[in-house]
Image (cartoon, rainbow, N blue to C red; front, side, top):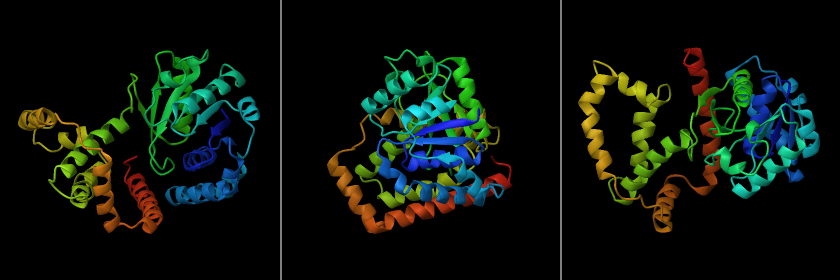
Length: 310
């Protein structure tokens, strides 16, 4: 496979374009709103520069030459072997796009969605070409966080799964194969469990938002930067994971029993949280902080690669 298509020229689409072009693919990019391409190349160039700080072998100028922008969807579908859709997270928009791509692209072309939570069967429920459709869900920003969840539907073919796996192996992704459809997939369900408990602890007054953040930022997150929850507990008891479960399993069971209330995600709770966060980080500092986040992410990626952790 040499040619890939990207539907959507926003931040996620630009990130995909950087990933695919640095991996040697020719990239065709389409967006319904052509004005997005006024700033598209500068975004992709920035993302490639960040990637080059992780992998010095990346040629930014050659990668940029591989990207063709503002391509009509008809041309894109006729030119590529794989399509990555990154349109807004609105079911009707994705359904309309997939119907159009299904009618335009040859039957062998894999069509993937970057959806954060929608199963592919919801997006493609009325399509003839369900067999060639799959979710390829990234974390944000995709070019700095290598995890990609591949989530097929009941009617997705094994050949489609294998072609998607090949694309992301070449692209250097850490592939998570989700074996059964579920809303939110794996990443967002784990994130949702943590966010729900954080919101519960905040709204019920156990700690303020920055103190809750500190337990991850200065506590659990330091381990989680290079190991997941199961490896963490495997190392946290002398006899390994079975020993940990024997020691602490009952504690987690009791916690689960107590988590019967739905966390407060109301507008009122959101206003309180907003007030706390803006004291810590003003609106005009958000972009600066996001840029610093990306700088720290690329530095962390480099450390992990240098230590054979990826």
